Image (cartoon, rainbow, N blue to C red; front, side, top):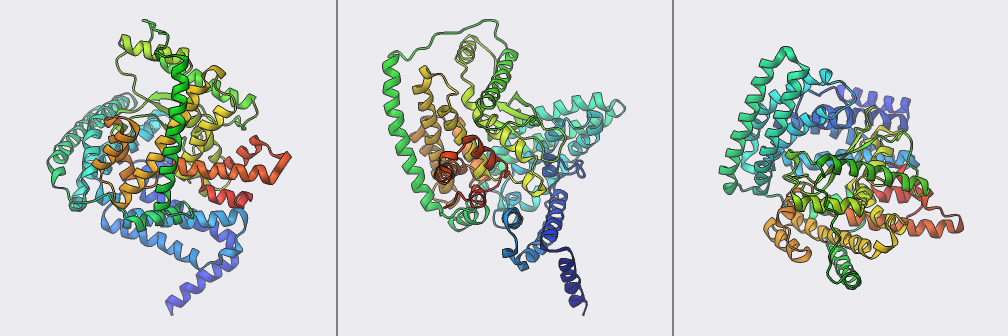
Length: 561
């Protein structure tokens, strides 16, 4: 009787509110549940109700969260999806896939069981995300930073519940992250001493405990990694599930591997031809030195900032894409030390979806000691304005513009969508589009196109490696040999990349796969709109949808036929 009454009340609620209103209610319920379960994620998107906490990965808490979101999913599945049209249809699909992805990551690919690195990454990310939050004063944030610093020891200890399942590759990530993590703790402690002058003894205690816990954790990982028996492999069935249900791709992983090989071979041939042209122009391959003995780190970062601003100005003035006035600043900073175990190149930290502070951070390669050779290198970079290629990917019109626009979407669900197929696909598309639109000087186009094809070739290899690591046909060691053979020796860089691929299946394949979908949309938009086609309008239309799977954008805009 009571069960019947509950079902009746649910039915009445749906009937009264209507399917669209109920969908919005379920979206809010899901977002609230997710923020409570993943406090560091919540901080990252600008929800500050749980800033003092870290995720509780105990079996009981995970069961409760999975049960709560499964109730939402079951109600979604009972709805008539055909009643939702346009944006509501997209939001229905996005909410369903978001819940299914959480379930996947807690059950089918439980990183909290497999990865020792998670137990250091998450608290460090949690502290760092508070440090860079400019929406509040340091005095307001300091108690939460202190609370997360205090929680590090207990959080690391909670790993014991899952130690038997840990995979070897994630131990290496954890070991390397510790050293950078120590520096972050030291930096956070210095901030806390100033922000909480009445709590210096407590800050010193938590700092010392955290440093000791990190040191012990590193020793533990070094001892245990050789006996680890877990695996990062998710299997072909699960990989294909992600492609279909999370990325909305109508293609399997074996077909993607073939596409990767096709583009690798195509780009290699193009690079060989362009290489001969470039060499004929300058047989020695030399460049004029722009060595400046007074060059400093600040000079280099100031150049980066100037170039970011100039690149944004180019796209705005040439009417290639709209850059709204409310897009926040994009600031270049050196890659934080604790992130370098899985990131050896450049990266981007987006502004929180729900924050008043919309500053994005462009992480550049570390500026190590500037000896004479380094000053020559950076001097040449500045003279030739060699940073533009990176900017179009990470800043304008790449990630910073894309996510800044997404953060203004009226749907809260759209704001928290970070589908890598559209994120990375758009950024890679921008590299080629910027070259076609005249961002680079005519006398440098051969070299620029060589770089464009090199970027595509690299992402083609990523498709092959990502799929192969996930389905088990490559090990991390064989993947490293494979990448060194196909792309040239770069063991340290590729090692970090492979660690990231193993922890985030399908992220690495997203770049070229997403770009190809965008190019397909572009071609269909040109045919559909004929003489009325506008490249700027095309860019504005797809960016306005938020960072969602591109196939859903194509379906809405009619670029899928």
